Length: 451
Image 1 (cartoon, one colour):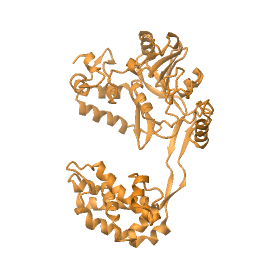
Image 2 (cartoon, helix red, strand yellow):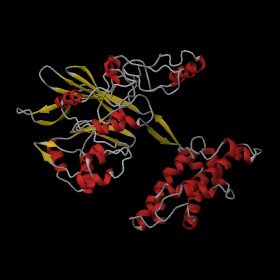
Image 3 (cartoon, helix red, strand yellow):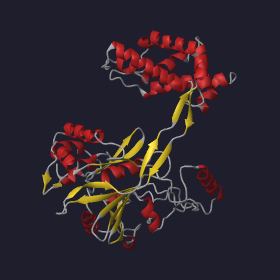
Image 4 (spheres, one colour):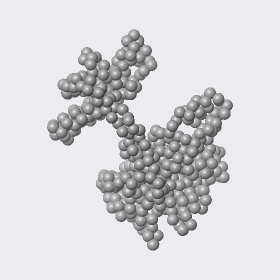
């Protein structure tokens, strides 16, 4: 398969091509092909692989500015990779500073989501330098620095994560674990050990060992989500006051963003030897530590529910083996069956709240959506009402979230004694959640360690 075929926009055969042709080799001390470039399915092209300031200069100078009916030459739109993804571009601030931007905010307006009434926010270059995912800087003595920033506000920033994963230089890696984002640093010695693995599965295992050997504060650094949002106060709908008011109300109630710079970023310095050869990256900015919320169990309420909880666990043990739980031969739950189980719980919950409600009204207004928040008293009612038909899908949802699922399809590697203990522990955590027996007595915090 040729390089042209490899970059087909439909992505056909790309991973087959990679497995056959992407053995990791070194030439003149540089990695010829970085396998991380193919981490996301929608990346159908060979991405940048920019590892030094000199390479980012060369990349910028080698890319022709994109000029079209939408963009002028003065806007200097130079895509990092595919020109079809023009919003992912290199921005030259000056001879010693470049931005690698993913388009979430940009001095060029790429997006117009809401039609002619919508006036997109266009940051200044100074504001963009602050919020951009990656900023490369070179000092007078030639020392190179990379500043890395997470997405703005709460929630998931998946395109931002993908951009970091594919665009960070060699020796810096982006990871997500337990819903938190981290940057890890790795020496050339560690990476060369990984490079020798030309087998696809072995390469993945070796990469995983790089993460397993990292330690928080040493070479694993928490990357908190940024709070600074320069668009706060911007009028997005100058001719639609109602829409603008809704937007302003959202920002007033959004505690995850603010107008002032939060300083939540990581800056790394590139270390080199006397010959100028790359040795690794060193954190030279403030670091951050995430401290999880501290939770307690309402022991008094749980003591009062000891008997129904025990009875329900016995009920689970007595019927789980005869329930199919919607699992197929591969141990996967059919989504439609899963929704059906949720629908039974939803209907029972709504009827419990309003015994006179019409069943058709439930289907029209509530659908399949189900979560456990605010349902603690209802679950307590199910535990005590042994004739309620919603008890069966309640058992099935526990089975799907526990080791019983693996046991049911013959995939559990645990001995009977260990499995029994594991299921009991899982049930205890699950029942605490669905009965809402836990409460937070100390909120999650992010602590900043200053250099």
